[in-house]
Image (cartoon, rainbow, N blue to C red):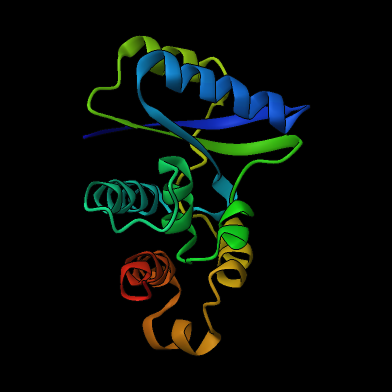
Length: 168
């Protein structure tokens, strides 16, 4: 299994059209593509862990959702609730986005097509500007942060991603 991340900013006038476009690219190349709001991602490791765990769950038939893209969102959200996971998706307007492509092979042509959908930029990493949104979304308490330190917030998010398997 290979994972390819395309990250950047984009203007989405119509989410439905955008999702159909990435769905068309996914179908054309026999891959899964999921769009994630980069402002709720605590780093590259967060996205990769979610994609790997989702793929493993699908292979072992212990998935929550029947859709591989939704499974990626569920793990990325650190939660089993589809409604909460969907809130990690993209929305109409300006977005910082990560397009996660997963498949046996990710053809260069697929990566190029996905790259045309965004103005590529480093929006994947954890930054101080993301702190409040991430802490709130993942329910990270100030006590947890006091115990491990601000720099470990991305590790606390990874812990929640890992706990999705325990909560099944």
